[in-house]
Image (cartoon, rainbow, N blue to C red; front, side):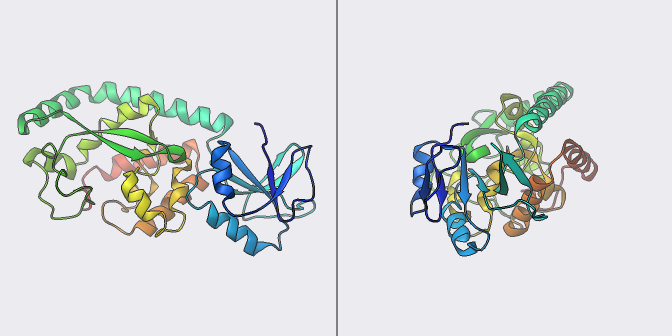
Length: 292
C-alpha cells in the first residue's frame, strides 16, 4: 500500500512523512485519479459536520474510508479500530474481504460452485434444451451488472424472454404481472432456475454464492441517491443468494429493507453466516411469490 496524501481539516501536519492536505471539494475525483484504495481522514471527533460532508462526497464510491482521530485510551463500540503503521484508525466504511477472509471466501465459493455444478449438470442440460425449444435465440442471457468495488461484469442466466425484448422499451424493472417471458421462461423465473448458470460466474470469480444481489448499472445510478447506503453493498462480491433474499426481500419489495439486510450481512460476514444462508435458501426453496 502506497500513501499518496492524507486529508486533514487544516493540512498542517505530516504522518510518517506522508503529505497531509486540507480537505477541499472534489477530493473524490482526486482519489479516483490516483486509483486510491483507501482514504484516511485526520479529523477530531468533534468535526462531525465535516466528516458527514466527506462521507456525502464519497457516497457513490466503494473506496475504503478510515478516520484517524486521537483514540488512545478511548473505547468505541460502534466501529472497529484498525492499527496501521502505528496509527489507530476508526473504520468508517470497510469491506470485510481482506487478507485471510478474502482467501477463505474465494475457497468457499470455488469449491462449492464446482461441487454444485457437477451435481446439477444433468438438470442444466434439460433446462438448456427447454430454453432452446421454447423460442429462437441463445440458451444464455447475458447482461451487465455492477459488482464488487463498483465494477461491471456480465451475468449469466438461462434466457427466459424472447431476444431483444427490451429493444423498444429500454431497461425495465421486473414486476408482478408482466408478460415478457416465454411460457418456459416464466416457469424458470418463478422457480429461480434461470439463475443456475450464475455458478459459472462464481467459478470465474465475478460473483460469490452468497452476497447482495447485483443490479444493472442504469438502476444503480437511479437508486444510489434514493436509498441510503446503497453503494456500500458493492464492498463485497455480488451473490446468487443473500441475507435479504432468504428474509423475503427480493423482486419488487422495499429496496430500503433489502439494502439494510445487505449491509447487515457485510458487517457480520463469516463463513458460518454464509453456510447458514445457503442452508436457508435450500430449506425455503426456490419458488417465491416475488420471483417473476
